[in-house]
Length: 310
Image (cartoon, rainbow, N blue to C red; front, side):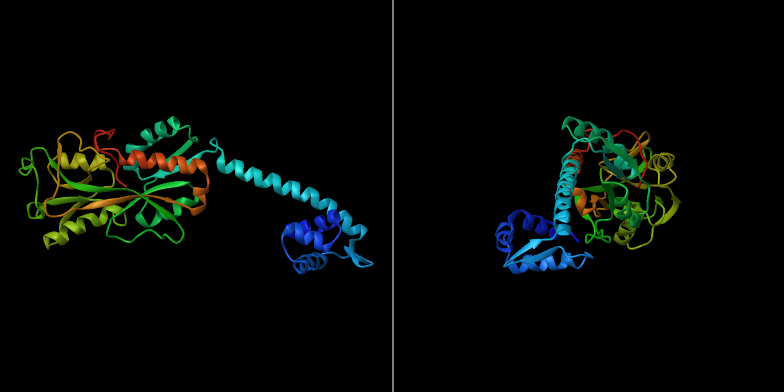
């Protein structure tokens, strides 16, 4: 039996005829009969009987109709509980982000959500390979992820993807490097340098490939470092260059950053969610606040000093 069948039985008990039930439920008498027949197949005893030209309930049917009242009340309470959950500002919202976004945005996001009267936040930094970001939505309501703009898109058939930022990547070099005095660099200027890259499989690993493609030659990658602060310290030593995000990461002492005039390496930063998460008012509030934080100018709250990469 299901709830629709119990509703029909209850209405028959209270209204006394198939026609009256059909009018009340805005269906045909035939549809009412079909629901009663389906309900009867689940019962070991008759639920209805003919009394002259009228279909009436048996004692078992009346007992089940009485129980249907309790079922309707329980379903209504369940529905209201779901609605209250979806609308409640007190239900925590989990937000996960790769480390540089977490460092740049978690603090402002917490303040923004609190100012908007939003829900409590549960923040988590996640250092994962690009392919692993979509799976994080199983444990977090909002996942801040990044990828190369020209790389594979997120699987939108099972995710909701909200773009937050396309962030340029600039060349970081030691402040005393011979090229540091130039305001802008060309790919040809840096193609012969030693380089730092992130580990294979992480979102920024392909960024140097774009520079190499523009140079028409492979770049010499001598270090694999996922932490921007470690990468910047190596850059400051003069041993190698690196690509650093221009909006969410500061270069740190002894390091300068320069844009490439003839190439535009970048990363796309997106919020990933399960479709049903957007039904919650708290999640929508957090997502709107995250969009505002991400849209602010680079120097409006950007952290100082080098930070951790993806």
